[in-house]
Image (cartoon, rainbow, N blue to C red; front, side):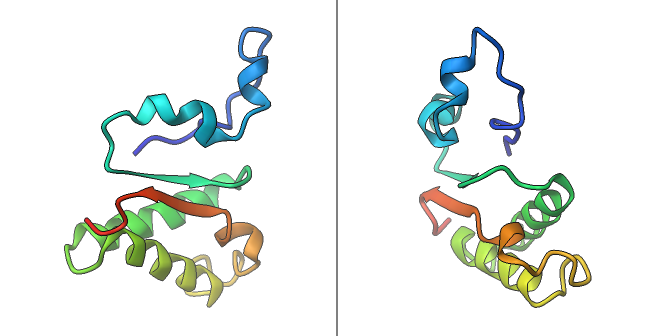
Length: 104
């Protein structure tokens, strides 16, 4: 798992990258990956950790696809099962998108 593409502060050298959406300039970092879990906007760290951990934990059991694992983690967050209701607002669970192969 790779994270933090958008969390790095922009510097003069990276200023042009900072203006681009993460998938546009981070894509090279994931060359060879079957899929990438990315966000459409900056996310809060604690909820991001919980959602990605739940996603990869469910997917690692081998019964759910990557896409379904993400969906289940998002639903758990929405329903308040993940984060005790603190992250039920769409700001916390909606920015995630799975690019690439959602099945394996």
